Image (cartoon, rainbow, N blue to C red; front, side, top):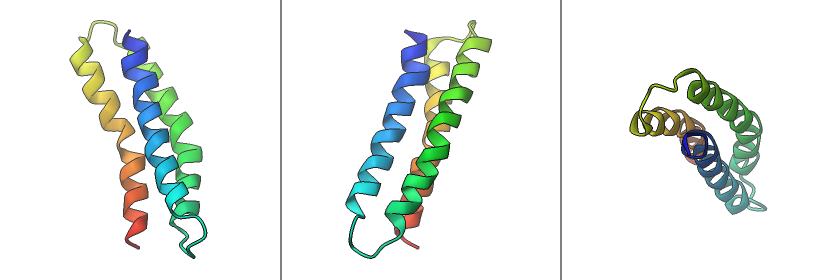
Amino acid sequence: MRVFIGVILPSAFQALVIFIIASMNQGNGSWAGLAAFLVGMFAIPITLLMNGLYVWKNPQHNLLQVMGKCFTLAVIAPFLCILTLFL
């Protein structure tokens, strides 16, 4: 359960947001879709690895602490992708 909530769920959220941004910006002359795709290509595996290591190294933390730290880390890449929409 800790792996699902700490690793898989934040990465799925991150992939969903990046996919939505990339698919909304196809064919309209904006480079935001490409930027979101490139950010996601590197950020999703790195987030998976970092969250997996955090969950594995800290088995004493309760589920709320794991969820808070893992989702905080997973929100960074979608936030960067949303910022590219306004550039």
